[in-house]
Image 1: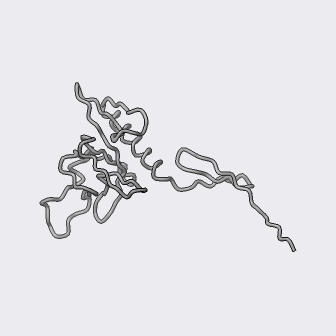
Image 2 (image 1 turned 180 degrees about the vertical axis):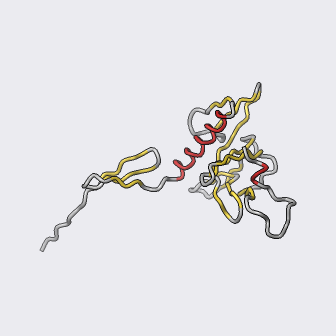
Image 3 (image 1 turned 135 degrees about the vertical axis):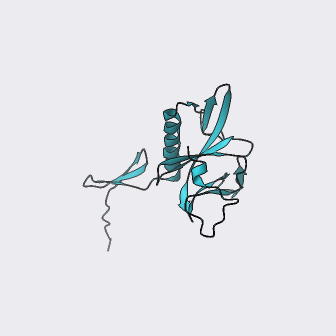
Length: 162
């Protein structure tokens, strides 16, 4: 005896923030944003903040540069890598290196950029972090009060707020 399968037809469409599913009754369900879309939103928010403050901004052509934005200050171009910060253990954390998912190699930005600009979606704040003094791997900007009273070697987010 042959079984017949009832298939519900869904149509997948790309949106500006990810993908959406259109069901047979034409209702639309938005999926969660992927990491590329999250990064693009952060980059757009950082560019908007720079323009609001009167800076001149240039964008590199394509995705092959290690920097996301060129900030023009007089005769000097400052290379900026945009990052999305996430709250973790009392501070805003962001990666100071890129990861290759196929080879598991990490590539650091030390010679390729001049500073990080970090957008924190939960607060809407942007932080300007010079590359000098950044640790390899992950950097945390402290937002919560320190429980043990330590202040040396702690990077407080308020010192980097843009």
